[in-house]
Image (cartoon, rainbow, N blue to C red; front, top):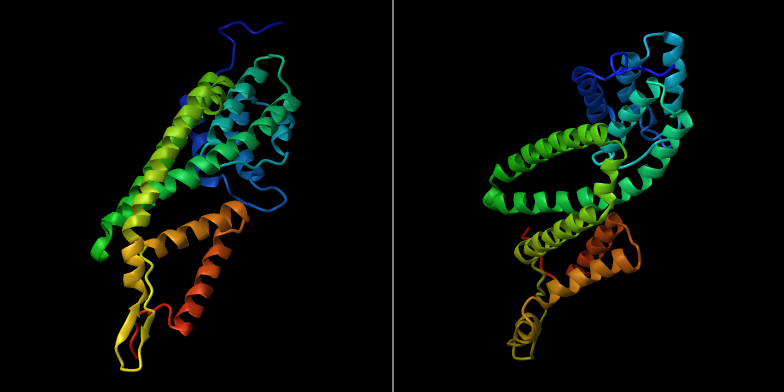
Amino acid sequence: MENTTDTMKKLDRKTLNKSFHRWFWGALTCFSQEHMQTFGYMASMLPIIKKLYPKHDDQVKAIHAYTAFFNTNPMLGTVIVGITASMEQARSNGQNIDGETINDMRAGLMGPIAGIGDSLIDGTLIPILLGISLGMSSGGSPVGAIFYIVSWVLIAYFGQRFLYFRGYKFGDQAVSFLVGKQGAAIRHAIGIVGSMVVGGVLASWVNVTTSLKLVGSNGKVFLNLQDKLDSIYPGILTVAITFFCWWLMTKKHVSAIWTMLILVAVSLVGVLLGFFNPGLSY
């Protein structure tokens, strides 16, 4: 016998808030290479399960669907948790949804959401915030650090909250916004803004120069390499180092950590050979 409108189970705001906060604070709880975000996901679904299934045996049966491996971008992945809450509510009301259907949905979405989230959040949003913060920190001012902490916390909290409740409200239709044409256009626009900010940070904060000078037998400098380079292309060493880092990471797939280590090695060799001058005095 199908449920009528009066007897249908519905999640209240308090339960949804509890579920969201458990994900926000514990998405990476008990994180391991074997389970990744499985336990954080399961913890966020416990309030949903307890609300929809009063009997303990039904709770145990329902929560079993969330023991499977799960890993995605923690911020954008919030929408998957919201969609799951909506599907779990539909399952408790007798609709044709089972644990395997929920797992198929999660497995199908966690990869694309991770790719979008990593590029949009880690690769675009965070560099934009850091670029603005660096500009505000000139002269040793703490304003930049405060701005970054406050802005990141507010964006992370309210952004994830928005995605969670949109996922719950619209179900799997919410994902079409992220992976559809509108989402692609927004990501492209944000990527352009991010490139502009990173370019501005590069021009303002990166300055590579050489101290190499050739001295004649009379003790006078007859070749100042930096002056010659500036007469050809001002900032050419900065551009060269930038393209070198880009080439390493995009073409050779060298990680950011190894790229930094290579730059340290280049700097040390350059100082020893007299090509760079760190301006240190002992």
